[in-house]
Amino acid sequence: MADSVLSIEGRNKKLLDEAYRIGCSTIVAFEPEDVFYITGFWGEGIAVVLNQSDTRLIVPSLEAERARSVARCEVVEAERGSSMLDKALSLVAEDATSVCTDCTDYSLFERMKVKLIESSRLKYSKDVFYNARKVKDEYEIKIIEEASSILDELFKACEYVIRAGISERQIQALLMYEAMLRGAYPPSYRHTLSPLIIASGMNSSLPHAEPSDRLISVGDLITVDLTLRYKGYIADATRTFALGSIDREKEYVYYTVREAQQRALEAVREGIQCREVDGIARSYIESNGYGERFIHSTGHGIGLDVHEPPWINRNSQDRLARGLCITIEPGIYIAGRYGVRIEDSVAIHGDGRVVVMNRYTKDLVKL
Image (cartoon, rainbow, N blue to C red; front, side):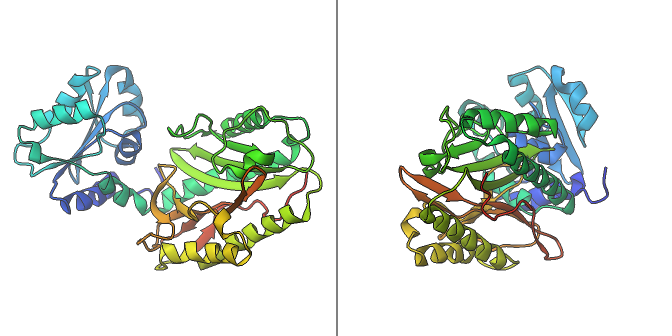
C-alpha cells in the first residue's frame, strides 16, 4: 500500500475526534461508503471502531474471503441478517459513553436501541462521517485525479460517438462501455435511473435529464455529464458539445457559462467562503442577463459520495480548505429549448495548490 495512504489509525482518529464532539466513543457504520473508508472493503458489512487502533469488520460468510483480501482490520464472520448486528453490538464496551451510527434503516436502528439498553447511548449522525471524510489525503486525491483523466478520455470519445441520428441512450451505452474498460463504474445513486446524463436539444434544458431515445440533430447542443466511480472514489465533470453550426444566441450562452466557470475556478483557494465562489459565477451570469436561468448551486464536494460537503451555494457557511475536492459547474437553462453546463473536478492539495483535474478543452467543440 502506498505510503501516502492515511493509515486505518489515522482515519479512525479523524472519525473518533468527530464522534467525541457529540459525546460518542464508539462508531458503528453500515453505509458502504463509510465502511469502505474505515476498512477498505466495499460490500455488505458493518464496521465497528472501538478505539483508534481497534476496528472490526463484520461480514456474512459469503463475503468473508473477499473481505479478508482487502480489509485493513480484523474480519469477523456472522450469519447474514440480525446476527451481524448482534455480533457488532456485542463488541461495544459496556462503559462506552454513546455509539455513533450512520444507520438509516428504522428497524435496525430500533433494534440497536434495544440491544444497547439505554436509547440515549445511540446517536445518529451522518455529519460525523462526512466531516471526517471531507478532507482527503494525497492518496485519495490521486485516485480522484485518475478518475478525472478517465472522464477526459470519454469526452474525447464523444468527438467520434456523437453524430446525427444517434440517440442519447446509445451515446450513454457506448460511453459506459468505454468507462468500464478503464475500470470506472456508475455510482448507482438513488435519484436517477441512468448512470450518465446525456441531454440533447430541448432535453438539455433539464439539468438532470434522463437519457432518452431522442435522436441527435444538426444544430443541437448536447450536454454530457459524466459521474463515475473509480477505485471507490467519484469524479464528476460536464461538457456541452454542438453538432454542426448553432445560432448566435446559443454560442453567446455557451461562452457566458464558460467565462462564469473560469472566474469561479480562479477564485478557488484555501480560506475563501463557498458562497463567495458561488457568487462570482452567479453574478457574471446575472450581468449577462441569464441570472434566473442559473437554477442550481455552483458546485459541491466529491469523494466517496457523488454529493458531499462542502456545498458551493449562496447560503453555504463553509470555507474551502486544504484537502477538499469539489466541483465547479455553473449552467444556463432555457426552458423547452436548450441548456449549457460546464463542470470540472477540482482539488486543493495539502500544500495549498489548486488543481483543476479535468483537462479536456472548454472551447466549444462543434462536431
